Image (cartoon, rainbow, N blue to C red; front, side, top):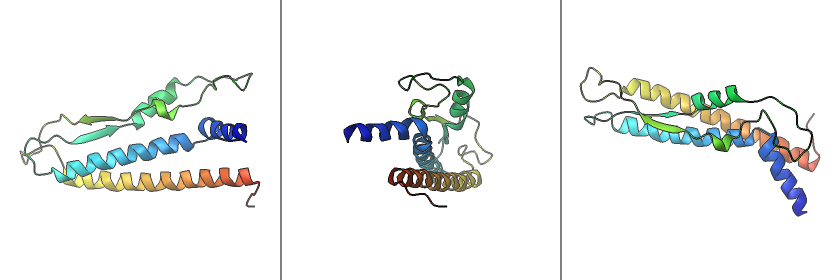
Length: 145
């Protein structure tokens, strides 16, 4: 039974989108904290807005991917993105202050970013749920037609 459990774990980690969706949910959570911090400090003199870079890093990794074919199941698959290797980067926006002279936080932009982030989080949650439900159905041998 232990070998079967390990096989399922390896399949989930290496052959599905679950790890990437999990990483995306982590990133959206981190981004939500940064946006919340920006909104909370909208009137704080000298505060610099925070940003979270991830999609750009993911795109760079995707562009570097190798395409290939493995001849043995023990080989490392080529062309797969290892989500755990891509880490989000939190940076401070060093652009100049807005005309209000207080800081560089634009409350309208932050609210828009917050809504976009909530939509992405919701969508990734649904996709992850669907992936896990499909895995559960395949393990149990049930398929909806």
